[in-house]
Length: 165
Image (tube, rainbow, N blue to C red; front, side, top):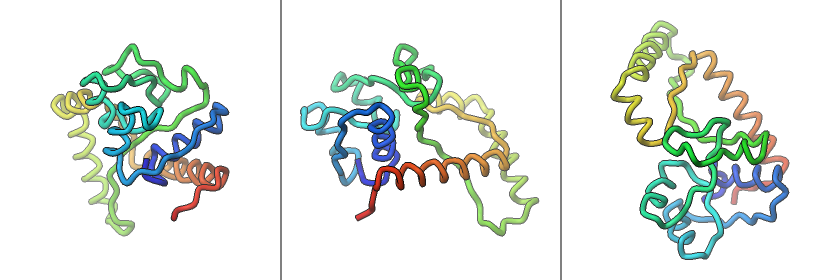
């Protein structure tokens, strides 16, 4: 995968935690990696479910595991890496952020509107089709989560000597 992406870093965590002899193969994007996997030029690809699922549905690859502690409703027979390697908890996530100086009343209004949209059946169904889950954290919880993620990835990068080139 592209250096420094969640696929690259997640692979480094997997390599270290599982003691596997993995070698990162840098790509300019996930498309070429997915072309190389069925062709046998690489043995595995770590990427998000939205990128992997079409390849499995077309019969070109098989998803061996998903990240997170819980199996995806979309792939209930696919184990999690956590099941096979307790402690492995690397996953992609998305969030919405505003400027640091955003007035609190505007931030609260936006947060409320987003929370309402996330509870809607249409959005929930679309996320489920994509294999995504919708958490319902508060802005304060999300800010804490981002801080935890930054600290985790800083340790991973320092511990594996990853350098951007």
